[in-house]
Length: 269
Image (tube, rainbow, N blue to C red; front, side, top):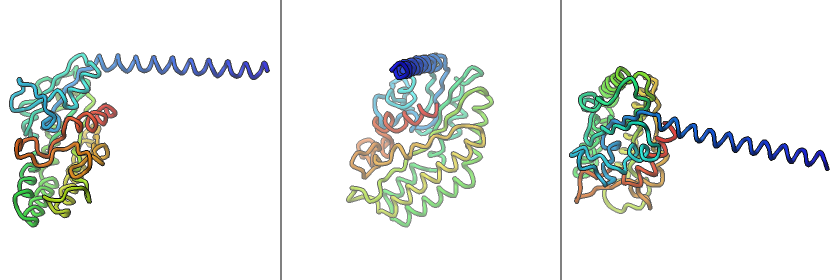
């Protein structure tokens, strides 16, 4: 009996110690987040186009309070937060107009970029308005650009970030697959076109991940998080073609930012 009581008491003490350490660890994590200087760069997937609730001061950049950078900052209260991501941004736009907040004190950087360089908007316009063969040809052209030109442009962006913020942890976020294959869409693109578009997204992500890794950055894929929430699914986190607001077409809704991008970035950051 005494031995069993001693064992039980020891177990209780160990559990209490573990809980105390967990609490201390959580407090330390919060403290670390609050001391961070965070800068959010990139294109419309980072600015939050499609999520609504845009900051009027951001103009055509359409930075949303529901975008994952703003949501992460609201939850973690970093010491400073600079949000310069902008709708339509290409790699040259990032290096030309978004890097000013970076500095030696910057601790954390997030970025999504490359889709506009590869012609994402033109691919979708071609696929929606023209024939299947034209769609597949345009996708092939985009993949060729990803092979030959995009890596150098990504290198330029990543090198510029390192030069201005050498101590920062940089998280590069990818793009979701757009379509649930065999899903509930009864009109629109053919299944062959949807498959090719998904494949092009994977192709772009793979190229981006390689360049990010070569610079020592963390690549965070969002495709698994969006699985089951693509266009043609029962609960899409992406806008399909929106004739009332073309700019939001094929961008994450607020649920895609909070349920897809935010947890992926949080885990990587």
